[in-house]
Image (cartoon, rainbow over all chains, first blue to last red; front, side, top):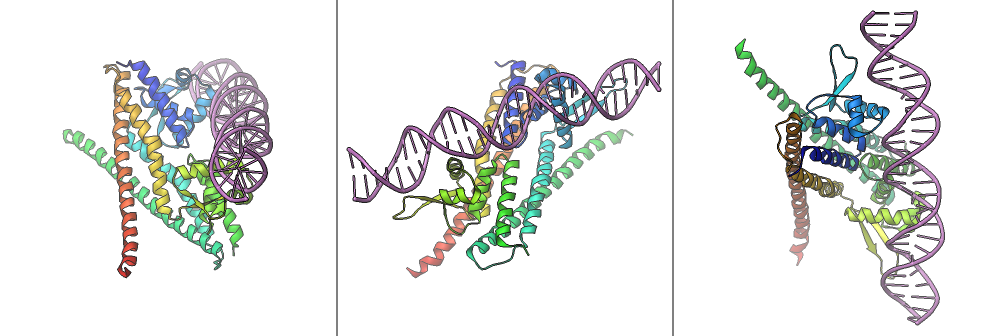
Length: 174
Length: 174
DNA sequence: CCACCATTTCAGAAGTTATTGAAAGTGTAG
DNA sequence: CTACACTTTCAATAACTTCTGAAATGGTGG
């Protein structure tokens, strides 16, 4: 049977590979994996040691992960160091990644298509083919945007409801 | 008002940029864009000239696009050259890309998680955190797989129906 | 305001991926 | 079988991305 240490290594390695096949860099994905399976928040040094990478590298990638909103900083009283931990809810994590990609990729695409709709409408085959492609992609992008935005809202509702149901369980005591 | 030539260039450039932010390489995306807005199938040489890239590069990337099933080969009688054209239905294109990514990314992920479920279940915080992460990701991956597979089936049904409705319009004559 | 500890930045090094172009391979017509 | 017209491969190299580590910056307690 596989030992925990071996499992952790495999997990980190697998997540890194998956990350790079999405546009995410290997190290960023590995740091994310490490934090995901760490029960406690880790310092920069601990991440450096665990993955054998430099201080600068950890800093840069941890910052990106925080930009994506899937890793957070923890400050401990009487300690100047920063400790990092990952969002542990995998659905929420996936949703945040989707949200970020929608913003970074879909929105610019829609913007460019809007510009391209300004192309002079010529009745040449070339002109028509371009106009059709732009129209179709614009339409598609808007639909995709709607679907993803709806999913985002559903998730945040679901999240809010979970949160409220937890609150309800506590409140009756007061 | 923007001219057609300027529009084509912008379109190709935009698609290339988008492609690279997804894991697709720039040139592959640009060739796809070029074929998408070309009313006729293009030869290797025509693609080389239009994008200013080498023969080998065109060959490799056109082949990848055909692997994804979004570009096809056309043979003209009495001509030894191969001509390439893109699938013009943007929804079908998107679906084929999804299908391919599901196969290439989600399936390997599920496989690795299945392996990792074999990790010895220890009651240490480390062991528990790993077990939870593996379980959650496995569950999520299966759900995502189901959603995407369902979408694939819906599209192929929709496609079949479109196809059948075209057939129906023709058949009554026979 | 200084000393200290931690974070951030960034230029150069290392590593990775894409591209070229020429050589090898393929298949067909004569 | 050979010449030809194309396609495919692949080693060298170019382009790009990531990583390092040391220096600059930031912020806190004394």
